[in-house]
Image 1 (cartoon, rainbow, N blue to C red):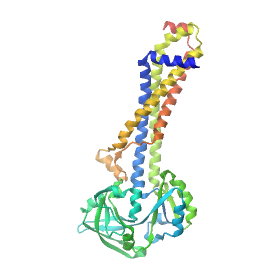
Image 2: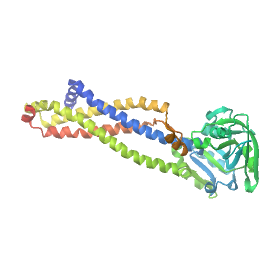
Image 3: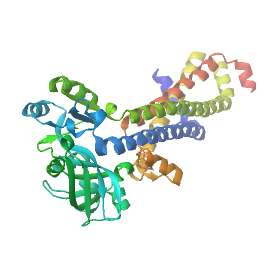
Image 4: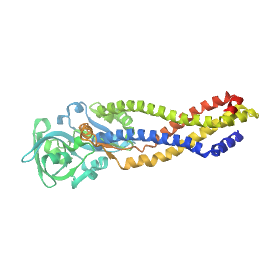
Length: 407
């Protein structure tokens, strides 16, 4: 076997041009497949970041039935037993207390419906990095009698930092909720929809506005690993009792999950077509190699070399070329995908960009740097190339020495 490996390695570099062409076909196939899948997964990441990570959170706790009605009357107190459950859970690092409701935001000349969110500003900063999303002004401090305004909403009202906005709505159990607040900062969210309708203020100020002193409408749980959201929700539900419900992000934004799954199925169809194109490209280079060396194979068989040994040498050659090309493609794909990861491409065109904004997504194309994507695509292309090596193996087993030498 060692002799066959040595022969295969020497044969590869007897004709460097042929070997490099074959490797290049695998190399570019890996880069193309990886880039396509990386961009698709990156787009899913942008969608999830825009609609989930930047605001909704991956797991929420609220009163049973609250998610359907979003009513302040479903507010509840955070008990010591609840905080004890959160502290003992290995995957949780904390929680963000919120009060969410709707109100009319108004200035002297404009008015618009807004989603008003009172939040624990310290924990909110840890979860959503809200302070890093400021485009103007300063971040809130606990107890501030001021608000942060979404950039889109500020643009609609034509207001900025230092201006005042009025909030009018309905409070706890039908009471009136009205307040006048200075704007301390302007925030731009990944989701354009949020930026156009969100008003944030410290939870103490919101509790005073809506008359829900000491109560919250929902808790957003902070996780060490967002991939554990489903397991964490299932684990916490029986510990918190029937009066509360724990929902993971698949339940919170099911329309996003359905959209991603539908697009992923479509992506599999395109990837299958791409793999077929890649397969024919690699197969073409293998056929070229067989045609160029047919006379050589005929001579070797004629002088007494066993067909099985010759076929094994060629099989090792093709597999070696495939593995080297796949590994080189893996290394080559990393900087290409990293560029599109660090430099997201804005989606041009009013219609396409506006359509994405209407769905609540940031209109950019960004690649993913998930290591599993690179390993998976390199492995698939390498396996395809190795399977194609079966053809020259069988072809050489059936070779006719006289006809081959005449060719």
